[in-house]
Amino acid sequence: MSTPAPIRVAIQGELGSFSHEAALAMLPGAEIVPCKTVVDVFNARFREVNVAVIPIENSLAGSVIEFYDAFHNYSNLLLNGYNLTAKILREHMHRIRHNLIARPGTGISEITQVLSHPIALAQCRIFFSEHHPNIQPVEHYDTAGSVKTIMQAGGDPSCAAIASKQAAEMYGGQILMEGIEDDPENYTRFFLFQFDAFAGGSGQFTSRISPNETPDKMSLFFSLKNRPGALVEALSIFSVLEMNLTKIESRPIKGRPWEYMFFVDVLFPKLEVADEALARLQPICETMIDLGRYKAAVLG
Amino acid sequence: MSTPAPIRVAIQGELGSFSHEAALAMLPGAEIVPCKTVVDVFNARFREVNVAVIPIENSLAGSVIEFYDAFHNYSNLLLNGYNLTAKILREHMHRIRHNLIARPGTGISEITQVLSHPIALAQCRIFFSEHHPNIQPVEHYDTAGSVKTIMQAGGDPSCAAIASKQAAEMYGGQILMEGIEDDPENYTRFFLFQFDAFAGGSGQFTSRISPNETPDKMSLFFSLKNRPGALVEALSIFSVLEMNLTKIESRPIKGRPWEYMFFVDVLFPKLEVADEALARLQPICETMIDLGRYKAAVLG
Image (cartoon, rainbow over all chains, first blue to last red; front, side):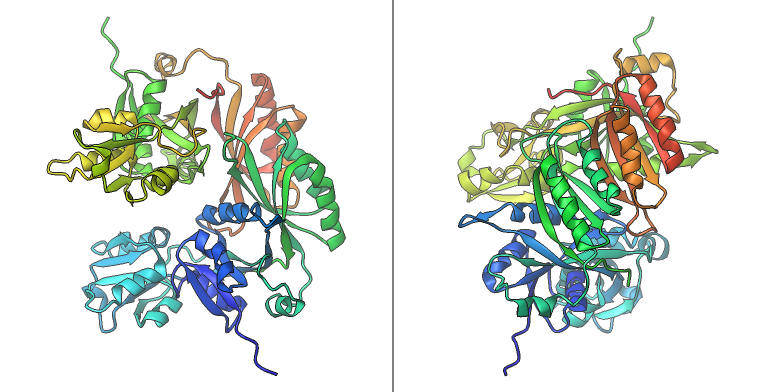
């Protein structure tokens, strides 16, 4: 029997990103397929990619809106008459540790500029304002991409980056300081999801990426018929069934100002209860998209 | 009797922004105080500014998260033992019309690059992809700021901007095309709010900025004791009192991963009902911030 080919996982951003770290934490040995944009992640299904790992929310910065919207748009796509739906297979809580990374042989006193993604820079404010007021933070498109940039041939050694350990290893950067984030309670929640179409869909494939765990959490998108009290009625379905709503996010519906689509995560005691909740929710919804059931992750 | 001094209104961004347009729509003749960052808007209270106009959500892009967070942080500030609270006085729905603006005398065939804020560029995708595939969109820090930039002395006439009509007038740009946004259902909802401290607080002042209207809408921040069903219980208070919840937004609580603060807008039939709702909500909340009562705006 031949060794099965590695699972190919799409991520957004450069190799060495936190998404890369999270993907390997869930699928050791997976082949990472970096995609430039969020839309490219969803289009990776045309490049023999079976699954994707996307950041859905950060415990400090909140929801990653681009992914919610892309997830929703994808789930509304029709292809050859079939509704495409991305199914969540797993969730993962990833501790975000920011590191100061420089070209090898550089001391911290030589650093004058630090490149990183705006959110990473904002999460290291104390490093800049209190400890290194002479170092200038410079916004860059990606955390790992900032390491890639400073490591380019002929680069300026006074220019450092803030990124993951994975990024330092990937591009040969040297970690000058570890864990420079202001708040250690910094976690990002990731979803591992499968594209319905082109996914092969064999049980063998699913068993390789989805561990043998009993699901206890589900995610849904829904929009409601626009009348007073509709949202409370919808959420009451969960509380009557003693299901805990762990997250609610609202997104605007295009073309209908001040009407919203809701994204919820709900814990359930057993699968029959989840089925019952969906059956009760359906009649009061205008649209409802079941995004899958999975095992709730715990903080690493 | 002397003419009263003009009301000074803080906005975020450059003169000529959509916030500038919205401020003048609410307060004709007001003096606009442009502030670089969101935090600067709240600090404008030290510069003899009484009120601010901030965008809170866009009908296509969703909530303006920075302002929710700044609003919340400000409302939690203590100064000399007093809790500062920003009170919403009015809301306003502003139609967003994007215009292609160039240096005077330039024809559209000469344009090769267009500067604007990333959200404005994203809202004019059809203009670029279908009608002008040879024109390159370039991200800039601000819509009005992009007009300011292209109008600078010695500027390159092949470089245009996307911004408001107000910005074209302000910096002497020429509108080449009006209304180039993909979706005409493009509105931004603005709040006019008053800083509690330093606001003078006289009835005369309030009557100048707050028209003689009966309020029918209120906004609140609250966080709940963390137990299953708490959110449904909170929202049920509004539905039992026949109040319509028009918006709910969740934001992470720092230091407590996966716990949230909620921001809601609720319509009420009369003031006593609003008071009753707050009295019922208080005991189940961990924190509750009343952000004020105002007249619900209608689409212009």
